Image (tube, rainbow, N blue to C red; front, side, top):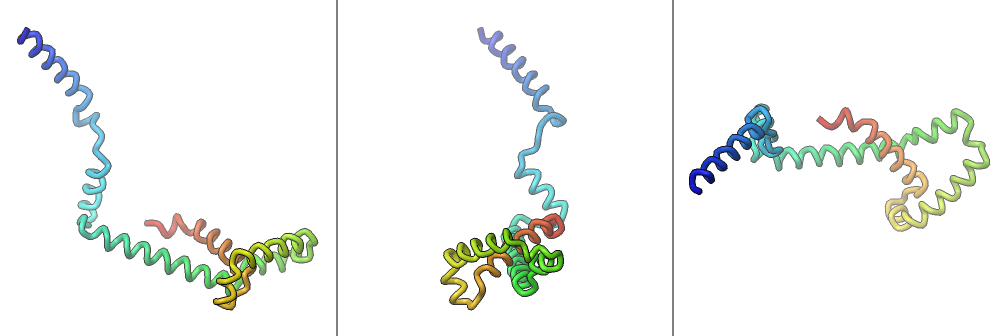
Length: 139
């Protein structure tokens, strides 16, 4: 019985070796991250600092884009130049959007002395620009 168990164990070990050989074995994700960071000369203790810097840069980028879109209104400029601003459907949609924006952003826009419709449009433009710039901004 002992010999049969030993031969069964060695057969199982042979099976394990064939499926878990170094060529077939996938590296755990944390091991791959550590190896990548080590190759780049970055220690694990530097990660919190890198995350804080990345998030800070993201917030600065978002706020500056929001400020630029609120100030320059790129979509409004395009709509005005193309002649779509005289459309009756656009006017109805604009008024409906203005009422919704005032309902949701009333206190914020009053405190900051900002037009709620313009703020909503700027936020939409900012989101679109952020989406388009994401491949460039994410390292």
